[in-house]
Image 1 (tube, rainbow, N blue to C red):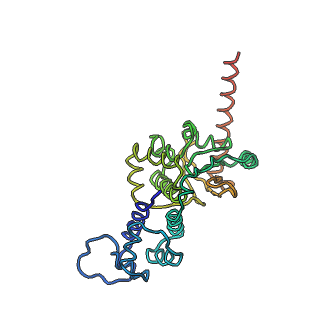
Image 2: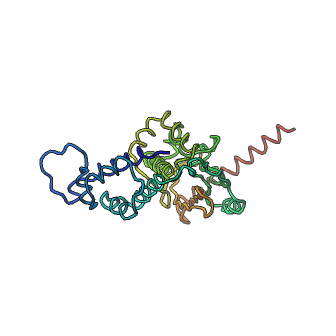
Image 3: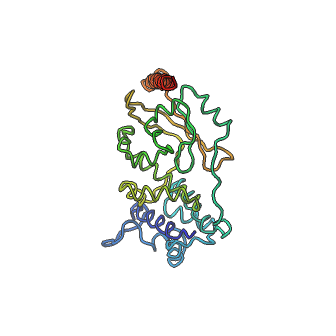
Length: 292
């Protein structure tokens, strides 16, 4: 797979974000391009304009780590963007044998399932690199009940294709931007994942918002933070989340939501658990009536 177009678009988008003032460069006359010129980035990175032009055309084959570091510093990349640049470089140096190899289908280990299910008072789920929710405890299924109506449950599909997403996520713009950034990171890491490519193609075709955000080439990695939900049954909940990659399970991570004790969020989680229990009782009663 030739990732030159991806490399070129990423470098151009980062260069366009840096103003001469940020780079400490004098401004003379009217500038025709947003951000810095190629020659200015080349100077900051300590390389010739010809060499930087080759890189910005998407040719990262054989580029050394020292060159990538100089480029990252000149472009003022943050840690996530720097890792993304390195992933693009690894993909550019991938041999033909790797191209034919398809990613192994991810499965959740029983021990991980027990951990997720054992968190009775905290919503927790396992997702893959395509944002499919592969396993979840009852509280997570209650919190994201509308997402789990999809098959498979996929948070990015829900965010961009289900009109209810703007209600569930009061900060929809941030959630959408972060989700696209995660997929952008995963494409660089897994350029031969056909299902990931199919998901991006589907969202690009069906969602103008996704297509616009995808064009920014911004990247994101989920670690920790806060997220607001407006649940249809219990109202607004603001929760802290932690996301951890699962060792030995490439592409899988576990996310856990929590609330500080004696806070409105903790009360809302208790209400959500009660609502989920009543839903389960109603479903069991309905099934029992059907069977009889």
